[in-house]
Amino acid sequence: MNTYETIDLNDYVQTGEGGTALTYNHKDGKTLAKLFMPSVTADNAIREFSINQVVYELGLPTPKPIRLITDGTRYGAEYELIQHKRSFTRIISQEPDQLVPLSERFAVLAKQIHQTPADTKRLPDMKELVMPWIDKISNLPDDLRARINRFMDTIPSTPTCLHGDLHIGNIITDGQRDLWIDVGDFAYGVPEWDLGMMYYAANFLSAERADNIFHLDNDMLKAHWTAFAKAYYGTDSQEVLNAEVQKLQPFIFIKMTFFVSKLCDGKRPLSEFIIQYLDKALPK
Image (cartoon, rainbow, N blue to C red; front, side, top):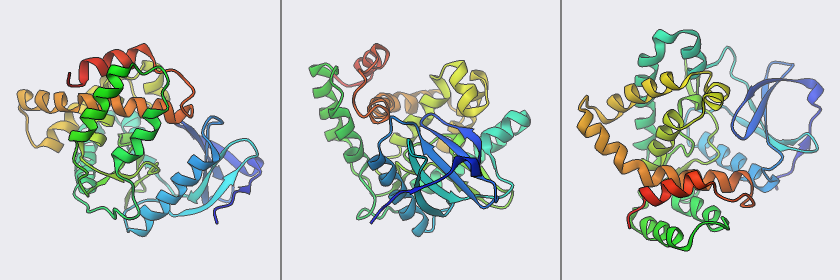
């Protein structure tokens, strides 16, 4: 049975901030605690921890999950602390000349995930993960909801792995190993789910969020996408790359709708920005 153990934050030092959670290193130097924002429910934290256990047991490179934790207000989990680790984005922010080589390396790592057969009995289909959260959005126009449903029916449930929150901030290295982090939405399906997430993170964030999440400015994130895309798709042809980006558009904004709903448990209206882009992206 999954149960939470209460921790004393005085035993930890905050080390990071993401879009939905804060991270803390234990003062003993052995573990890392990830606590979600108060809007993320205990059940969601349990689900993420369970998926982390599956990914780890499948032998994919990710820190060992240890236990579920709470500080009395927020919920999360504790993981193996990778010594001397740095995220790819932290390295790029400190050593800008590493932007292209690390973006290309990240493309190789992403393709490895997308070529890995998924355990479909233990991992969710990305479509089945996404749709219940989209159904919770109250202000989604009926026409868009119908178009999302029709588009989802056209997407195959490809039995290969997806990270679920694929961006270059979710890979760390200790100099010997590259390890995936934040794998709570790990699932299976077509790679466009992951690639759409990557494109959004590199091209749509405000300057403030780009700095907070990635320690990079918007121009660097766009340069990262360009280097990644050329390596991932194996081409320098701008025409081909533009066509691939066009394919990603519906996945980008369906995934953003999912994230908005998940972050606020379906209680926050969808922004007009996402509604407008959904209308443009979805087939009529």
